[in-house]
Length: 337
Image (tube, rainbow, N blue to C red; front, side, top):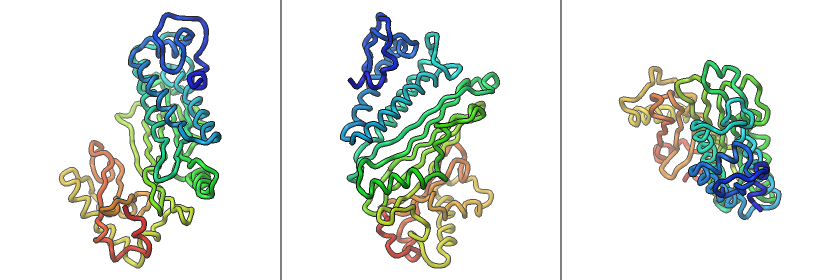
């Protein structure tokens, strides 16, 4: 039954002499997409793993949440049918080696995405995912014919007050952080760049739900893509986003945090430090979107190139809580760890 739900569009006549894939009957494979899955052992294995990941992701969900996940997966199947082609349309000829490799990566990425659906801190978290693929208008110049877009946002399964408040916040309060329209209604000119944005629930504590926004953009023809990591901390009691005043208080906390951050960056990056103007990080380190919380201290997140070369990735430094003790607002200790 699950296979018919997931890959129903692929179950087309006539029969072909291929092995059995996990999610559909290969004797009914007709499209180049379906045939590629059936005739390529690694891709068939990836299909099997993906089918198991979907079953697991659906486990324990309410009927409305299950419907949302299945709808998202149906959109992914349609996306996968066109994302690894040359014109962002379903393939009419067999996939070549590059196309097969592209499909394997898509299946692997989707499997990882589905694995985010789970219980965390007593909450059943699932995700609403959207996708798009469109032809690059400058494909001849960049040798990248299709741009792909992906957006993933979390939900709490349930009808209780907390689930409703959190889901409303995700739908209406994160617009400045993540733009679903990059996948739901991309413009033709967006075809020159790949974009991914995943808003993941990374921690649930009695006081907060931490959301990690992992983004990635790749302008076709560029030497490399640009990843990004920022945070949203949702305060469960207040049903709102964390602000700087929830963590720090009094005059001068910004300057002291900036001093501690600069010292930590110099120590952490050493010879790799790229900071001609030390004041360039001042606005970054006082921005709650750059903060994460650990038992050891406040984690400060930097993006590539901000303090170190691209090869260093997105560096972090930790400011120990004892060094911040005199700066912390009442109740801030509840946010730690």
